[in-house]
Image (cartoon, rainbow, N blue to C red; front, side, top):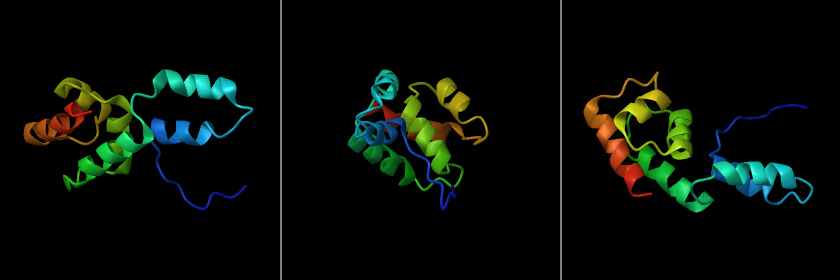
Length: 100
């Protein structure tokens, strides 16, 4: 097997892929437990976070935010422990997450 590229996926996007596999009911049930947003809403939120144009937030950070949907600065800082966001940057991200 050769890996040609790596692209981070949200849990919602991965669940959407797994839903097409008939023989993977156990996996579908597992994903259903953790999916908080639809694929479309997850992609929309990810796009809004990317639109902040914050150089401290890479694709993996964006995916983590969408998957965990942190509601407080402390939660966001735990999810993004290596990003080092300022209070203003943190609040901007949290405001977007609140809409979802």
